[in-house]
Every structure is written in C-alpha cells, then in structure tokens.
Image 1 (tube, rainbow, N blue to C red):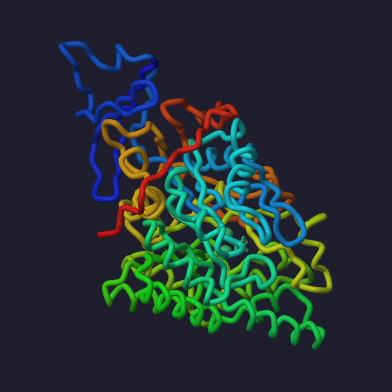
Image 2: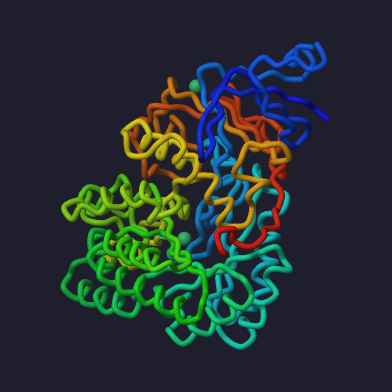
Length: 473
Ligand code: URP
Ligand code: ZN
Ligand code: ZN
Ligand code: ZN
C-alpha cells in the first residue's frame, strides 16, 4: 500500500494547532509525528512513496457536508448536480464526505427510496458519502421502516413542517415519528417552517401581483421559522427525541434553539453559508429575475434586521453547532426560469458544496471564528453529530486519510470560469474573493486534488455506515 508523508504543516484540530507531520499508509492515517522525525535512524521523508510539502500551510481533516441534495427531484425538476458532478465539486473545495438525503415521497416505501439513492450514488462518487432518510409520508408502514434504518447504517431522518402536499408532516405525524425516532436512537432532523401559513401568504402575494423572487422571502417570514422551530422543540421535548434543526436562518429561531439548549435539551442547529453572507435585499431583491438564483428555503433574511451577525455569533457561542450547504443547485435556464411571473414556481435551492470550506475560512480571516472553530463546524462536529467520528472529522492514527492542505497565503476567486465545478449555469457566489486556498485534498489516502488539477475518479467514494449521534448522553 502507498505511503504518504504530509510534512512541514500546522495540523489544526477542533481543539488546537501545532506543527506535525502526518503519515498515511494506504487509506488510513498511521501517525502524527514530530516534524522531521526519523524512524530507526531513517529519515521518514526518504522512505515513503510520496511527500507532500505543507510548509506554511494548515493540515486539517477533510470537510464533511452533512446536507446535500444531489439529483433531488424537487419543484417540478431535478437538482442539477448528480453524485458524480456534485462530489467532484465537493472534492475541489476540500469536502471529502457528503451526507445526502434519500427521499421517500408521498405514496412510496422507505426501503425502495433508500435503494433508489444507493443506486444513484454507487460507483459515481469522488468522495465518501452517506444518507439521511427523508420521510415524506408518516404512516404505520414508514414508522415501522424507521426502526430498521440503523441496520442500514443510517441513524438520522428528516421531516418537513413546510411544503404541504409534497413532504409536509402535520403535528400528529411529527409526534408519532419523534416517538419512534426517540425509541430507535435516531436523530430527528427538521425543516422548521410553518408550511400551511406560508402557502396562504404566497397565495395573497401572488393575487396582489407580487410575483418577483423577492416575495419568496416575504412569504417565508421569520415568524414562521421561529414558530415552527419552537413547535419542533416542544414536540421533541415531549417525546424525548433528540432534534437537529436544518438550515437555520432567522435570529429568532436561533434564540429558540439557544433557550432549549440552556434548558439542557438535546437540541442542535445547523446553518449554511448563504445565511451568513447573503440577504433578502441584496440577493433575493436583485433586479429583474436575477434574485431567483438565491431562492432557497428557509429564505435569505433581511440585512436590516441583522440576522447575519446573530447567526455568526451563534456559531461562535455553540448555539449553532455546524455549517452545511443544503446544496440543491438549479440552473437559471430551464429550471429557475420556470418561476418567471410566479416566484412560487422557482425551484428552491442554492449550490455551494464547492465553496463551504473557503467561505467559512473567510470567517476566520474576518475575525468571526477561530481557526479551530472552523475545523470544528465544518468537519469535527458533523462527524460527531452523524456518528462518524474517529473514522472521519479528525486527524489521528486509525482515521481515514481524508485530509486537506489549506494555504492561508493562497487566494480563491469564486465564479464561473474561475473555480466552478458544479453543474450550474451560474454561481450564487460569483465575485466572492477568499483569502485562502484549498491546495491538496486526499480522500482515503489518495490525492484527488493537487496543483490545481483533479486527480480523483468516480467510484472511489464509498458508502459509509454511520453510528448513533455522538452528542447524546
Ligand atoms: O431550498 C432548499 N432548501 N432546497 C432543498 C430542500 C430543503 O428544504 O432542504
Ligand atoms: Zn429543508
Ligand atoms: Zn435541504
Ligand atoms: Zn494555492
């Protein structure tokens, strides 16, 4: 098996940083060593197959994006990245594992939906992957099937309080699912927005001729995120289900999570880069139909209401624990443009899987979070949250050699024709400049990105079975 030594870098973990060389044998890390170590008198660098010089650079565990939707059928179309293009873009950006969502649609059976997602991903991925299970119809059968998910290596499932007629669950269904989830040791993930109320506002806005993308953000008011977040927390409280709220954007929803955590509850929250950088006014409110690029749910929030600062702060204070992308890309032409003249027909989703590590690193440069917190919210916590830690999320002997060499003196210009490997005709991040650069990426010991070149292969990424959430006492 091939051996690799990553030498001269600063190894950064969730808890600290220090000079160390990382020795990789085959797919695993075998040792972290004092820089320049000799073994039995031999200079290690002369005995390994490959030496990667990381001088002046950070060496970090590969990113884990725990919220992606490759090839997701949604909004009358299908997300533009499949598992091949999406995981390749992830690798380019220093993300070495994704957790995607298998979708049980209304009227479908859970095992079949999971098999469909396995079939879509197998042999296609550049980096490792796993699935959460979406339950789009809570009934006797799907509840029974929830109990069998751990046998499939799947320990989390997602419900929707939004999208009536598509994935929506009412409170009775949520209660029953949470009871089963609690009983089975599953983490309940929640899309927390009050869907029925949103639908009324959508109908009223359209009737008033308010059809532009901007009104997507008006209809999905923060009150409806706060309310749903609170309701989810209370139902979780009652049932003893650990709860993970996805794509949190409103500062009021953050406050609900913080209050529940202050009461000692197993309540967790994720946010996404779009809620940290983009806004209702600047993006959804862009001239003409341009704002459609940024139609996603929960929506971008008002700059004037100062949500962004609060969400950054929550990341710092651990009221929010991690950052995923909710990568769900749609092209403007042929997809987003279905909603010209009716914002409710714009497929919901933004593509960011390639840029999460960079965008969050910019938070370090800007003094928003520490270097260690960057590693924690992008890799270590996702690993612990979703039962992967030890194998993923850490550079330690025995861990998979999913490693990123990150150059703090490098630079990344985001946009079409620059760094854009996602299957989309636009970038939601066009023009963003990052004071750092993903230099080398290893996936299970193999260099997949180096010297500005992609060296991976589809099919190298494998399905990873997961244990229970590692934050539960
Ligand atoms: O706009 C979004 N978030 N699209 C993906 C589906 C979801 O709700 O996560
Ligand atoms: Zn969602
Ligand atoms: Zn999503
Ligand atoms: Zn570079």
